[in-house]
Image (cartoon, rainbow, N blue to C red; front, side, top):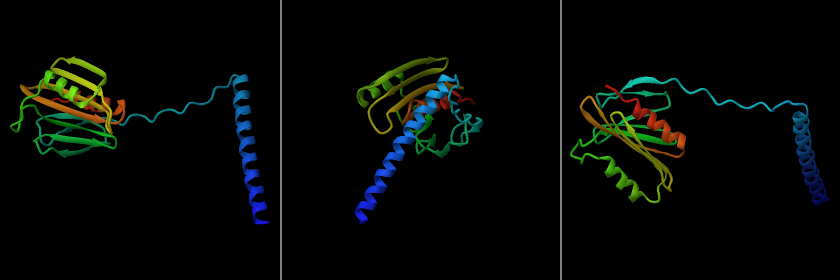
Length: 175
């Protein structure tokens, strides 16, 4: 008797699901015939950017409240968010070789099969952005000369929007 009752409940639920699907389709067809368009959900507005002084470098950057900032062991600053991060250091500081665009192209080649490669010349430097297989596939490397000092940004993220978010921070760097 329990098995029969359970089977009846399962069949009733399946039938309800099918009729609900049909009702949704019929409703959508009616809306399209009447000329009504479904309401699009709008993306949440972007958080306001705030000029923020970097504690380890003589720079400031435009950051939104979602960033977590920390000091980098190499004398720079790290910024992280849920799906990526940015590291900013003096290029060639702390006994490390100064990286060039050619060095970063070689680094990209070592990373694997890079796709969606984008190279951009900036007024005060360069940007190399690309995607490789892995957990954080979106990468960008940026070199900039600001007030006579060379700086380097290393950006990692899960999605192209994460990559662009990091690029925007590095492009906003100023004294």
